[in-house]
Image (cartoon, rainbow, N blue to C red; front, top):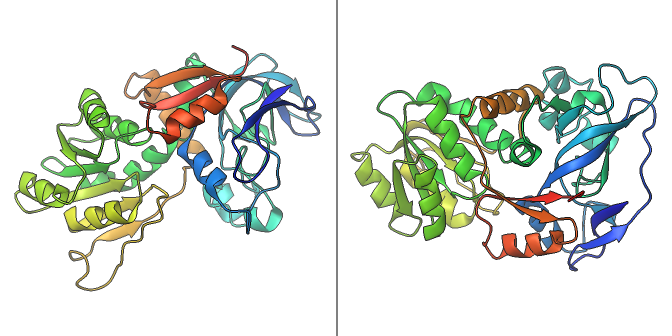
Length: 346
C-alpha cells in the first residue's frame, strides 16, 4: 500500500510503498477514507536526532477515519464495511485512568511502549490503518469522513479543554481563544454552542481573525503587545473567566496570564514551548493553570454527536496522498485555513 512516512530526521516526509498490514488477534484493519494533517506532526519532524522518541520510518497521521476492511480473531461488535473514527491516544485499557475512558492519561502507556497512531505507531496517512483494539473506534453514524476526521483531535482536544471550564462560563462571562487556526476555530464554535459567554479571539493573522468572526467570535483582536490591554478594556478591567491558548508560545502564555480574571482558568493547549509562572502575586488570585492532552473516549463520542447536531464543523482543505507533503508545506507556512485532510483513496 501507499503511505506517507517520515523516514529521516530533518527531511521532508515521503510517499512510499509498504506492505499491507494484516490484523492480528483483537485488531481491526481500516481502509482509510480520510486522515488529518496537524501541527503536532510538524513539531515531531522538527525534533533533533538526539533523543528522537520514535523509531523511523514512521507513517504519519494521528487523525483517522475509515471503513472496516478486515477483523482479527476475537473481535466482536464490529462488522466489515462499517465506518468509524479512530480514537488516537491509545492506552493499556486496564489502569485506573483507562477504566474511566481517559486513555489520553493512561498510567502505563510509556512503560508498555504504547503509542498513538502517527505518533509512534503506524498512522492513518496510508491506504490502510491497523487499529489495536475495537474500543478505539467511534461510529461515524452518517458523518462525512472529511468533516469528521479533524474532530478526532482538532475537535476532541478543544472540547476537552472547554468542558473543564463550563462551570465558570456563565451569562456575562468572557472566554478568550488565543490562536484561531485548526483547533482554535473549533474552540470558538464549541464555546458558542455550549456557553453564553462572550468569545474574544486573538491571532496574528487577519485571515484567521476573519475566520474567527465567521465561526462565531464576537470580538477579534490582533495578538500583539497591546492584546492584553485590549481584552482588559473589553471586559471593563475584570479579565476573562477562561482563557484557551492554542499556540502555547512564550508570548501567548504571557498574554493568557495577563487577561485572566480572578478565579479564572488558563488552559495551555498549544505546544509552542512557553511556560506560565504560577505563584502568589504572579497571577490574579486563584487562577487555575492547566496543560491538558487530547481527550477521553467518551468525549470523542460527544464531539461527534455535536457535529451531527450541526453545532460544530471544521473548515477543511483536501489533498491526495501524493500531495500530502505539499499539505505539510502549506500548513508550515500558515496557508491552511482550518485543517488539511488527506484522502488516501482519492
